Length: 91
Length: 416
Image 1 (cartoon, one colour):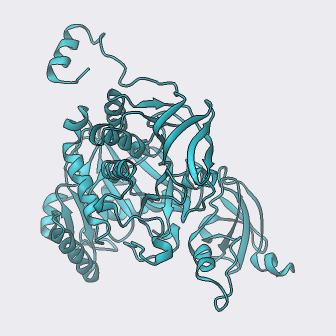
Image 2 (cartoon, one colour):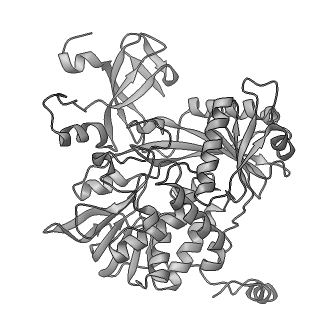
Image 3 (cartoon, chains in turn yellow, red):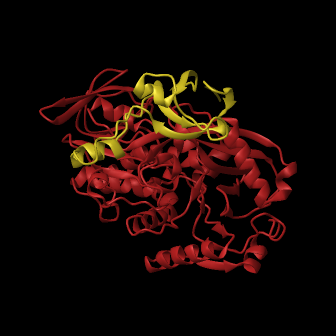
């Protein structure tokens, strides 16, 4: 599996560290209910299909990437800087 | 037909032409008392214990593929009960006791071989951790022995003891641990359940769960709808997908774990050895192949195959432990989909839907648990209350903080 890093080009998956589902939004720690925090920490959609997930390019550009990858075929559709996912801007 | 020395001699004289199919390939009936989704080891064991111990025979096991095609045929066949935490130890010890009587119970040769499981340690802190684990096991009535390097060397003389990056200092041995023939476990449970009237329905995939007024009333399948008073969900690898049909989100991620077999060799290693400085477990099958595995690949996956980095990592660990393996050729490897739970421990519990029961989250340790998982799940379904040794495997433990985290990795499923 090679991840097309937007900064470094296609690189072997060994250069990356996996975190998990990029769709999770951490609730505001002060305002959140216990139930919302439980949802965020423990529950997952665990999709079979296209999955947006966070990878860290530790042996490359040191950037966090949001990667859209199919969990049944491992085919990667896109990889963008994770920052742009939230700000909409190029990192 | 009961298997015995007499039936074997009789069939031998008749040229082995009279053997019957091991179980019926049943078609689904319209309604059952208990419907078990998932014909893996745990589902079949649940059916067997429901029928044999709890007197519930109007049961069907439905399986989307064929029996033995899932994780029950994709593991490294190790059985052991060397757990540390109080929520785990009695459960896995019950499993070990059920393994010891399994073949007589189901009248099938599962090749249960108590050849010993040896966990190696490579440093002083690791020795202390293993001593603690061994003591916890002994307090719970499980056998454990802490061996020094020379006693380990007497058991497995060909490992790299001095020159490696992680010299071996000793090991924690559970002599009652060992291996079992995984396919035979599935077939044995299937046959035993079938002989008590359980329908085993293959190639029947669940496409929906019918819930009325908060209570489950049946499932939709590729072979038509089936009504049931109780539905048991035991589909490790796909738990999240089936649970989603019942409107649930689970504390589980699906990850791929690879396993490996070498070419057949003469007897080399007569116990299971695990490498403490990395993640590697190795044993030799009765056919002669070395069976080994290591870490999961580490990312969400439903593909029953993995990638090269982990293969390389496992081979490196194997070479680090046992340099002589360098000339052995790898024959084949495969992947299975693991239910990685948020604390590394399983779930056997009710769900918010009445009449729907959940057995999930076995991570990559489900095979050894097969008998106790089936037994405790059958207990839960039959009596509507958890079996005492599985009472900690609650679905709500993540919300209440009562997690059972053997590894202390936290809510990061790819690290368990």
